Image 1 (cartoon, rainbow, N blue to C red):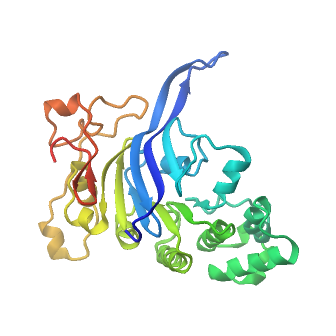
Image 2 (image 1 turned 180 degrees about the horizontal axis):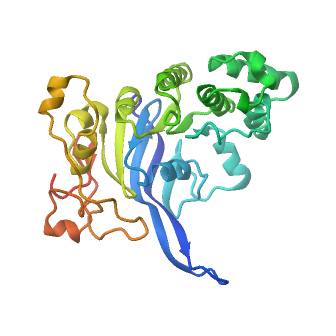
Length: 326
């Protein structure tokens, strides 16, 4: 935790996507419960990691927080301002303080626009400058992310994947945000480039006091860049703790299984580690199991796990978990 003040507060957040019946009337027959009642805080100046299997709701959580998706239920507060019912001009004013870096640098940049147009778009939308002033700002942003300002009039297809992601980072900084959702910003890049982008994000955080929600699959990268880590499973957060606390003493069985898959560079230590293999596949978010969502795959399952939802509770200072058996 970098600061005791919470910049973002999430309480009981839900995001359901309707499942409709094929045909003329498009009648709703169910819902995909992508995010189903999660609560946590992101402190000013910190990087909170959000990890879990594909399809667990990580990206939906990030997009709902910054209102790219409208929440089905729950509350999102940004700097003590409730965003739940915001729209129009009111939402636009608060949104310039939050941005998102998307996973795929190949599809997140408009191929028909020059780099100058792409980076200047937030400046135009939020009326932060025009003409020569805007041109200078775009040049500053390119230099800030390690690209030559002379590249202004080039198009995205003329850049490598790592360079495109740097352009996406520059665009996210254009409106001088306080909070950035990084949605797997390095997973589509070569391993040799990933470290450069991670180091760039860390340098920018120190320089501008940024707050990150860092969504990722790579648990080694998460431990390197994040201050705290939240573990998500089937729309629920099952554990949240300081990174060292979580990695050294994971409490939830799902967290233990995830961390047992992280490669260890020391062969001797790797031999002594017990690998946890989970049975089966995650259930469908359109029909989640009753009780604890993890109980069909959990090695510790008891009878009450199948019927009672575990309480989200703090087992020690800063370490939260949702499990009946912890």
